[in-house]
Amino acid sequence: MQQPGVGSPNCGRGWYLSAREQGEEQESAPLLPPAPPGSRALNHASSGVSFGFSVFNLMNAIMGSGILGLSYAMANTGIIGFSILLLIVASLAAYSVFLLLSMCIQTAVTSYEDLGLFAFGSPGKVLVASTIIIQNIGGPLNKCYKTKNGITSEAMSSYLLIVKSELPGAIAGFMSGHDSGSWYLDGRVLLLITSVCIVFPLALLPKIGFLGYTSSLSFFFMVYFALVVVIKKWSIPCPLTLNSPTEILQISNSTEDCKAKLFHFTKKSAYAIPTMAFSFLCHTSVLPIYCELRSPSKSRMQNVTNTGIGLSFLLYFVSALFGYLTFYDKVDSELLQGYTRYLPHDIVIMSVKLGVLFAVILTVPLIHFPARKAVMMIFFSHLPTSWICHILVTLTLNVIIVLIALYVPDIRNVFGLVGSTTSTCLLFVYPGLFCLKLSREDFISRQKLGAFALFIFGLFVGLLSLTLIVFNWINP
Image (cartoon, rainbow, N blue to C red; front, side, top):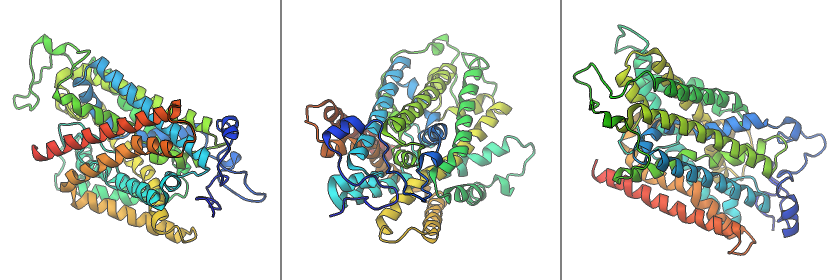
């Protein structure tokens, strides 16, 4: 009986490596077989994606609008408490990628879905693919800019919801005497334009590596955001003094409000854990990036992962720290709202808002790739690969996410309930569970104990997220 993935264009060697071979070859041996003579395989070393572009793509998959809620998380955990939690989550995210890569080497497959197939048969493959589709299309829509809890989402529909709700205001900020009825200030029109002119063409690209250029642009938008947060720390005095008597933000003149807390745990601190946990979710894009990496090997892809997560951690920490040190306990659950309130006509702040929105737009096509792959593996795996199928699936997915963003934002609690579960599974539960199932090592080995700890942590985060979402659902 043929093992899963054998004979497919992007599969490995199709058999289990022996224990000795694993020890000798796992770190440096290429995952993919040499291209046959005369072939034009894109995973060939000379035509693969560079290390730098792979890092940019991974960081684009990691970083999204979630960066705007981390200052709020720091305000509810303290600087040291936040630093410890963020470091733990980043380390666990890197370790879960390590387990995924280890299992891919052992089973010689290159997709998350086929790992589910190896571990639990066809139900496992369908479960993983369905999880990826739900997460990447819907995900938890209770965005930090919509609620006070700060729980974030990394899904296409939620990103397009941000475009629809925030882009008109960002454009209006640059215009004086604008007509509120103008088409360029209509969120639905802007959503359709960005979807048709930017998202759909980029999502049609056949290889995820082609998005390296747009991912690098998205990365520099995020760097710009972090730099502005640092600079504006010295532009906004503390205690905060606003001229507007109708300002929503409640301002105190006490200098006690300008003291940073190293540790600060309240009932609101519970929201910080899922906020940070989901801030490093990139696992659906890891294996597609791996397959197109130049000279792909476990050690090389792990270096890509460590670099991407490390740089994301740095940007997260810097922006969260200086955002918190600017507003302290008055920091908003969506950081830019605080700057908008205090500096409503600041050109730099308005440009940062546009930059973050464009970064969000450029992230949508990247998230689209694993969703499309999952759809094709479930429904069209029996058909030969063709451009017609590729275009139709891409178009269908884009129509679905646009319709969700346009017409069904009120079901964000339902998506949040499901999406928090899918995020936890993809980030922590599945990597740990697959390693426990597939690894040949003893249970008391370092790898399996680590996988078990990752699995338990995932269950904890998932249950905590569900509890918090249901609580906010019942008590809005």
